[in-house]
Length: 510
Image (cartoon, rainbow, N blue to C red; front, side, top):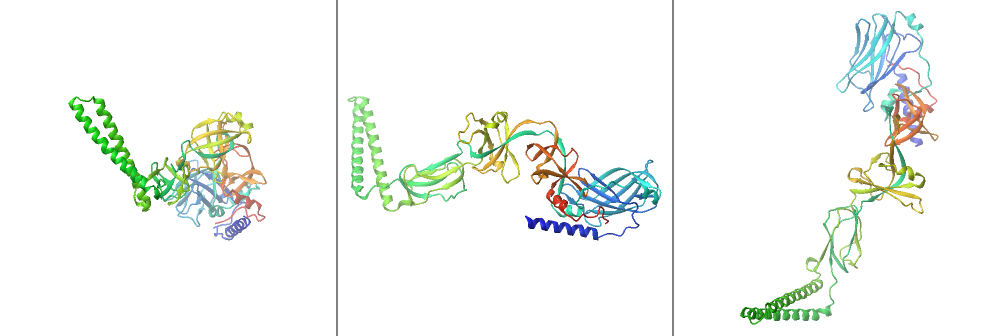
């Protein structure tokens, strides 16, 4: 980190030095002790302008800095007009066709009449067109009147030039005023939804003939074939018994068939009741089933003797009971397994439950929650979860926490099952107050601070007191006001600039 900070400081110093060395010649010497500055924002752009006091018949060089807010970058093309409008409606217009450097437009303004003027600066470009109405300015009758005008008050603001802002990852935002929902931040975990986790087990002792080539993380569909298992084959000494059983079954079926035919003739002749025929038919059916079972046992035995993996006879197909992903695979083709051996572990990650563990001291407040957000450690984002499933009623004896469970559709959230998270239990909404993005906060020796942009190139360090947090927004109870502009990207760079012993000059010419 020290190397990165040193690089940033070197870059900042070089930018400051370059800005102070480069000076476009001004038509005339500046009038007055200090140039005037103005900063103005619209929804599209930020304007920061420096210019000498305006004097009738004298040319004042305007250094106009224009920045697009989304993204925070220098305006690199377009024409800029400086307009001075008097009370009668007459307008003096002074134009430049493009920037002298990216983001900086130099415009020569030579007022024709003294008095109060309405100042406006208009940008017209292919990418953005905007207008900044800057209010009244004074046009002095002569240089002596301009020199006698009061100078702007000196400030202790931190200087951070536009050239630095444009070159680095920088951005600002407006302090808003609105209510946030109070929350309780508790540790939590991501679990599968009920029915979203399953072990695939061997149904009986046997040998795995084939196993699907699914490693951990592979997706499977419900009902998809995962493995085929063959029951244990009979021993070679059992072949005579199997053949004898088959012969006995065949003889029994032949006798049962003859008996059924005899019963049919007797019933047709009226010499036997119908019950006699029904019994004969049942005996024939049972004998047929016994023969088929004997044939199957012989086929299984023969397949085992010839490594019958190519034959589906006697094989049991194991299928995925749920759709999801493979968490672990313990099966391999050719291995012998006992009944109940786990072959695969499957989890459906698309439907989850987020379980928060509420400390005993927060249980009463937590019972007011109806919804929640998930904070992923290190991710810096807040994700909404679904409806409340249950609020626990019994404290865990060891952790002294109460579980609160939310259901969530994980297809959009992308959380990992088993992941540790923080759960923000959302409570009632607070009264309207200033709120800022959490990215604006800087830890300064353990105290939160923000940097307020008081001018285009001037920033103020403000300690703040924080209230509730909802998502990426944090309530500020003191330190900033609604409407102020704060640094949201690159705030630590402004902090480094505040620590620098080299302070650039207040103004700079372009």
